[in-house]
Image 1 (tube, rainbow, N blue to C red):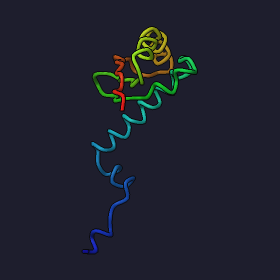
Image 2: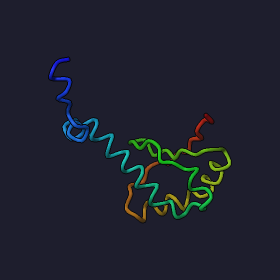
Image 3: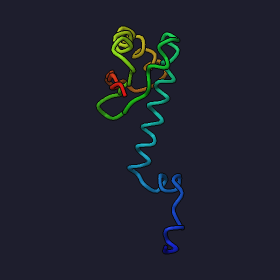
Length: 102
């Protein structure tokens, strides 16, 4: 094997030097932080069923385990949106996607 194979760039360095990857990392972090902002509004039994999904200019996706969690989340949507605005997050459309069962 050539020496260049063993001189791999660490992931953190690669992310820092690549604007597209750096942007993706920021969006993933912001998606998780948004969920952390609203997690207290979710019933405790429902929290494990909700995961942060993609965040882009079109909106934010919440991934849920099943349709009953999606229905409950839709009922909570006004409170979630208000909490995000109160925390200083810019208003974006929130979409809910039910994950397929494995």
